Image 1: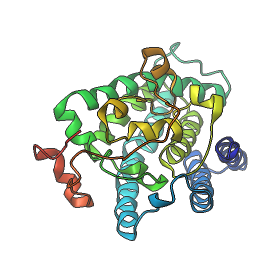
Image 2: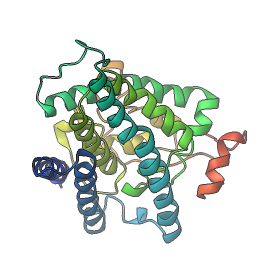
Image 3: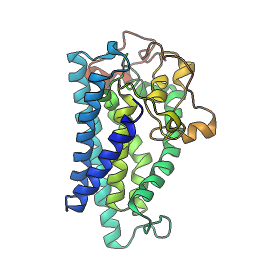
Image 4: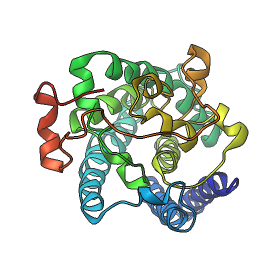
Length: 283
């Protein structure tokens, strides 16, 4: 389905804008938009799956729900969505936010787009480092452990890696005094694109595959083969992969996903400990 991706993201931003215009706080408006988008993506996975055999088991859904709630929702809420927005407001109220380094007068959507492009550059290199250096890969292996993709396992990250991610791609913008509504709009794209990126939706993005890091590209990043998974590092956008020669989208179907070590623990508590045990993280 060609239009599902832009339609769901468009719906999310319309809902975010309408709720914001009605006086709903930015954080709540963003979460409502993301929740509605998740419902549509779930429906798409059920009705038009990319791989029917990627349908998750109940145990996988339970584990990935824990990761999503604790690592992808609660932790970012504490470290970023609340902390960063409140820090941004505080810095602006105190008049100590960096001045002249951010185009505060630009429209919210344009600022959010600039934030996406600028934030993805350090995140791109950080992602490459998590693949290259063994101590970092042990943490990132948690994210690569699933043998199938569906939107809920987008949150399967070790909390230490997730905290580092937000310190790199979100906190600096608070220090620049980026407005709360811009940060919230960024979060809407970040979340909905991330859900699609990991989804089992049969979608075709066409030319958008040269701009966004969507599901057709990201599936290859989860390939069991390191020569395929060490590509497509973009978090939201694929533009830095294009620039640095790591974009990869061959004209064939992706093979097995996950780690070479098929015995890698999959439970939530077990994966909190796996980065501290050598030899489990096979590429």
